[in-house]
Image 1 (tube, rainbow, N blue to C red):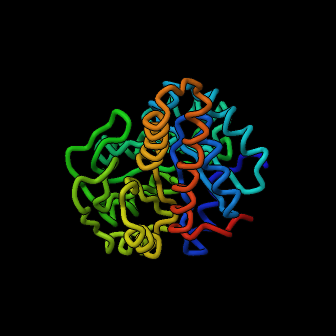
Image 2 (image 1 turned 30 degrees about the vertical axis):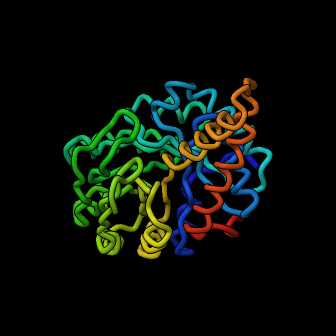
Image 3 (image 1 turned 90 degrees about the vertical axis):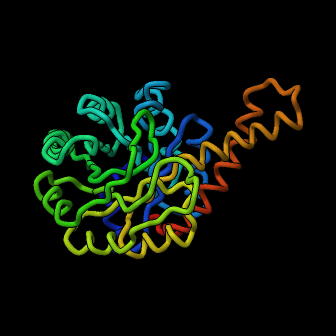
Amino acid sequence: MPLVTSKEMLKNAQAGRYAVGAFNVENMEMVKAVIGAAEELRAPVMLQTTPSTVKYGTVETFAAIVAAEAKKASVPVCLHLDHGDSYELACQCMENGYTSVMIDGSKEDFAGNVSVTKKVVEAAHAKGLPVEAELGKVGGKEDDHEAEADTNTDPMEAKDFVEQTQVDSLAVAIGTAHGFYEGTPVLDKERITEIKKVVSVPLVLHGSSGLSDEDVRECVERGMCKVNFATELRAAYTDAVKKLLKEKPETYDPKAFGKVGIPAVKEQVKKRICVCGSDGKAE
């Protein structure tokens, strides 16, 4: 089916008390793996690209690949800009077929975050497209943006932010970090509950790679409606290629790398879809 927006997807997840898995893709093979996993499990799914990914492969190319693969699928597929770092990039994505965008103004102060988010929301809503924003700071490194420390989201600031910006979903900081964790993460899960009490839009969990299934499930139960996975998919793909080259160092055909990478990523995506509880939720 054609690409759909994330708005209905996330509203359904919010009502059904599950989360939509949002998976970052880096190439055609990962796109096929993610959509294939969603198809097998009858799950709605979001595919995401970061600014560095589209800088490498271009917005137009990723939009064309995902649209072509989604057209063959019978489950809802959304193409989302993850951690959009400018109004201009968000607009470029919207103009070229993305059906959802994120503007990450979390590096700004509160007023600056509100300002850039409102600007993107106005442009997106004029096209009938939803916007995700971020309030608070998720630790670790995502693309070229690195947070030195976690600053968890204040519930009343979140309420004010959503009211001022009219954003459609909100990524909140609860102690997660981008990339793999060096130790055991300490998550402020109660903060999800507190934010949900005062914020009506779907909440988003970033920095989920490496979190235990139990942690993800509890975050979803408390109100997270979208859960992002990136680093663990990159690792699954790369580890499969490394294994092939170790066993068959004479391999030179790039298609052989994709043939082992696709099932590795697909299996990881299927596991995370089930943890999020979105399997069987496709409409």
